Length: 192
Image (cartoon, rainbow, N blue to C red):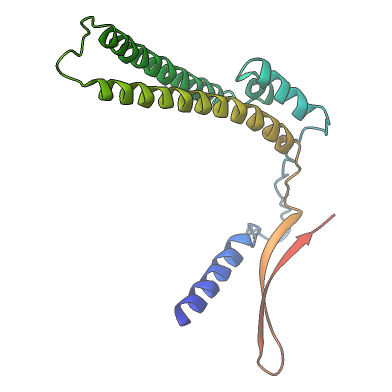
């Protein structure tokens, strides 16, 4: 129990130190005026209610186009890599399925096949079932990556318009009353 309490307090202290901001103080001679550095305001995109739906529509039409609309060019190769991998495994499993199916058809027609004497008829049936299942999984993975591409474009378009600035702070709070009881808590401050 003491270890958990110690870890909790350590966590609160670490959050507290990371959340406090400090100004750089400059030592100056008397009579010298020093201007404080001007902080640049972060530029946020103005709210556009149609931006998320546009990004999702673009990604649905052509995967990666919604990411390009959002300016996340680095995500486009990831989307195409995932889709290409799913398509590759589908085609490979389809090729293997056709290979074992043709061998099975030849075997039940009493014609020679490429697995004659090495693989039993039951093993040919199991191989067909195995590759059929893998084809279906490959299709599901490819469709899942396609949908994930659309959802990613939509969510990123929403988050690009979310205003995050220093007026929103999260600070731990440690409060002691005059009796000696300690109250722990977190405070969320929103300044205008």
